[in-house]
Length: 128
Image (cartoon, rainbow, N blue to C red; front, side, top):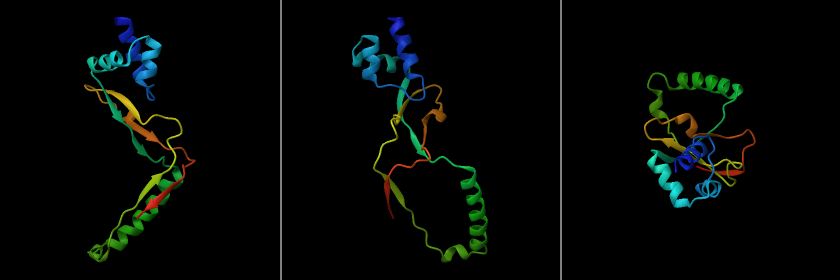
């Protein structure tokens, strides 16, 4: 019914949408019906990107380091450097926020797809 479709759209068109199962319970419909409605109104499920929250002190540190690095790499000295990369693996979740959101196919809102970490970082370990 049109009222159910409207309820589903209002439920999923937010930054932290509920699960399809909880929407189905609230609308007194099956989960497959909710899934079909979401597809019919041209929404798609996307995973959010995890980004770090930058503070003003972090921005200032990056500026100072960038100038120093630029001076070190000037005049083809970058050929003497070896670069490596590391990755963090976190043991905790994202503090109760869901890692997915619904985006309308015709108008993607990429700001909604960003999941900012709080200043209290979950425990994790680094692999080099």
